[in-house]
Image (cartoon, rainbow, N blue to C red):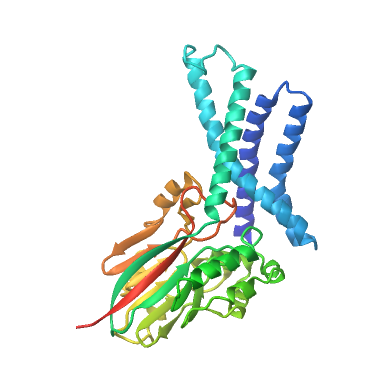
Length: 386
């Protein structure tokens, strides 16, 4: 609980400081506009408050429609805020260049920047931010299907069609309609197996029940079955409630356990590493595989792509992960690329291959500018071991 309070305090402080800077720059550009300027200031302040007020309202008010309206509106502002922050910083650098070099076209000036120049930059920042949010939102609505063929040492037989996705984040933004559309797209790929690699729910399982999300997920129709692992958001939502909800949709959640599929593939599902923060033990991968049949290829599901050497040491042939969103919004992909050995796509360690999906949903801002949403179709071809 102490860790959560600290995280919340830091997040709230960053949010407040970021918006103080944005308001400062916006109010400078709105100076002297009279009544229209007053309405613009009021709109901006209310938009800033929409997300935190909406998150409080969804936990305290019985009317879900009101809180959802605030959260959706506030989530759009989050995308606008991030984009505007970097554009305002760029405009400040432009103003500094104009002051250092007064002869600079359009930006050159002596002394404090004139109101007309600040207003022009404000209009430019606002217009570009709206454009980026609009394009990023549209981009987030259309998952791309990525395909790959994987050769595994095994016992032969027909290839397995495995469809996987991660980071759906079912909630106020990704609602019942989006989930049903995703399910149809997955079923059209005629999967033998469906793997859900964590962060399937967002934070409030009771709201998912109200929108009958389980009914939508229950329409997944793989020949063999659907398997999932927990992500950090399953723990934020309440692990037991989240797992129970997913299993009510016919999805088996693997929590530090392994299953054998058709006597030719072992699937090992790991608890998310967030479990330790909630007082749970996360088993080593080697221990999870101790009772698994020998000689079969192992596919591991681990939401966060950290400590990849563990899968390599355990003899895993393929590990699939999510979590990173590949930053979701530019330029945060630069951050995730530094934090994770693989932020998106494929990697290899020894004989172990790793696939990190950028995810199919969104968290926070309902937009994607650093990576498209994706669904993976893996065709597993089992070559007989010599």
